[in-house]
Image 1: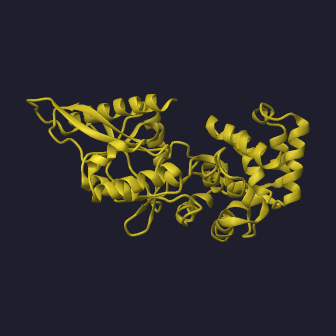
Image 2: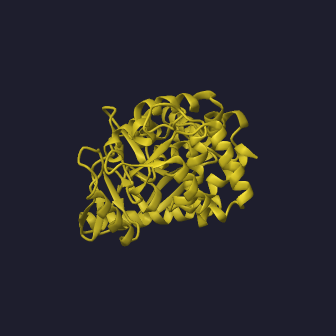
Image 3: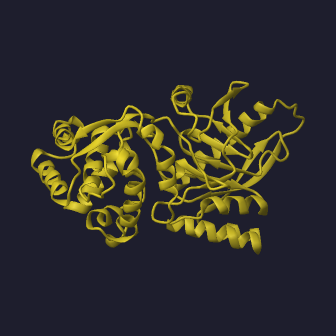
Length: 360
């Protein structure tokens, strides 16, 4: 999707959310106002909407991160809030939009996220297709209460949650240990109906996978598996309930430092390591320099990603593969299992790209 189409789509989604919000509060309106807002696109999962210095500060706190666009966005917001907001128009990844609203000041800020999740002031409105919302509601009923997670409510035929805005998005795995906090928070589900699978049986299922055969012929697949074995694998890995989409933008860190896990629509019984390594996959891009490639670091025992790997093994290794050692070949098995099992086509394609990048 082109950048212009992305902005247009997000503008329309924001307008739709304002309409939902006005329906939600059920107020009588006498006028229609035109209101200007700024859109910040960090090229990540979320797009940020704001209109004053106070909201700029709130957004800046949430977005400070590792990617180039996030760094530019954070610096732009931080200094424009101190100097002059008119400077925003000169920043390439910030655009001005105008929305129509019957409320004079409908929002201070909003965050537009995946699957139609909208954060509007103190509310979170969920505007995805109803069948998706219903699926998540059903999944949330299965989540242990000990895990910090949202509850979806309904009012005036609108779905919303009002639980989790006080905090910040988790930092990428190479910046802080937020991901480890999230994995530790989910330890209880990794222990539920935990099933141990011998690694040779895992490899057998990979070799027989129809999804895998779409990406690799038998000869190339055998080479990949042999490299995983050569790098080192555990005797077994586990299946358990998993979040299914666990990365930094689905983990919020509350003001008191506790993890809060959102977006449970992919919750399922599957290989536990699919949660463990997804954050590394989300940190990868084709433009990543060779020595900063997360999976290169994992298989070669180098860099900050390897350091995080050791910390994660100590925290959650027992639940994932029955000990706290690290196995350099396991990330390769993860990438193959992503192609084999993931319901998300984008993750499958990215896993294929990473395998070809690091091994061939």
